[in-house]
Image (cartoon, rainbow, N blue to C red; front, side, top):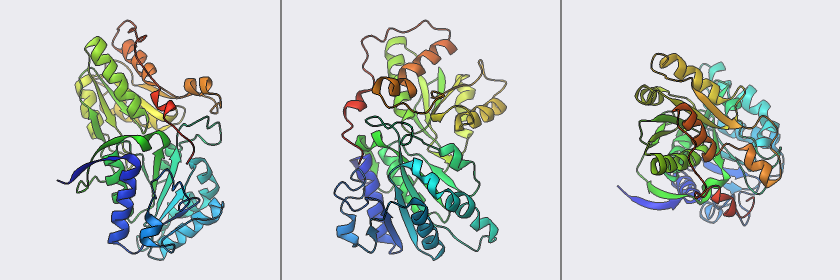
Amino acid sequence: MSSKTLTYREALNRALVKEMEADPDVFVFGLDVPDHKRIYGSTKGLVEQFGARRVFGTPLSEEAMTGVALGAALSGLRPIHVHIRADFMLLGMNQIANMASNLRYMSGGRLRLPLVIRAMIGRGWGQSAQHSKSMHSIFAHFPGLKVVLPTTPQDAYSLMRSSIRDDNPVIFLEHRWLYDIAGEVDEECVIPLGPPGVLRAGDAATVVATSWMNVEAVKAAEVLAKKRGIELEVIDVRTVSPFQEDVIAASVEKTKHCIVVDHDWVFCGFGAEVAARISHRCFGSLKRPVERLGYAPTPCPTTRPLETLFYPSAVEIIRVVERMLDLGQTDLSDESFYSYEQRFKGPF
């Protein structure tokens, strides 16, 4: 085991280096990929090591550049296309939803599309309505696309390597606030696209979370363990598509309670898919209906106080757990939340 402590951005960078060293067909491109900030540092050193033919910036033209990525993958290369805002992937939606998701099926499996599209999601200094979407439920809706949302540095490293090696198009969504998080990374660890991960074991309730919501869920679990002596089981979905609910169902059979905390709007979102599956699988075991948390039902506001109310938080998770377990409200006046807002230094 060759484990070392890496930040999320370092883990992504290490995964890219490993795959580019192993396969000369892997290349990285997109707006600001080789600039001085290097996509939050995740592409640092790549152009120096692999050259401008394999690491290059592009014009602000999402539709055309997504088409370039699609054509390159069909030609036998393994492109990694970077969108610095997931919102603007909507401009390349014809290539993603009408072509990339279909071509392998329509060709009877003769065409391969080993394409990774990286995109940044999440909060920052006031992202507002056009820079804050996640859209994983939209991408996952199309059969043929795989959708990944890594939370830990280990998952960022291992799932990026699995995504690059996959012969299908993969949408890889990274929350901005995760880039500073550090953790142990085993460079030999292989994590396939599909199975979720258990971030914290418990028996009082199951919390199923995506992306940054795992950080909030673990914080909620720590507070409830300290103040109430109850343990939440926190399960990181990791990949929205393919989605495997077996681990979640086994947890709910144990805890009898389930809360889905999604980094997206609740209405028609991924949380509804999880709630439906768990309700079907665990109907006889659930003591309460599955609860869902997500964005407030409005476009994302710009100002910090309203933005804080827009996103689900550890406090909201705690309050939902208290209602599910018939507990009174925990005194949270001495707890510190939202600390990552103070660490965020800028968009790139």
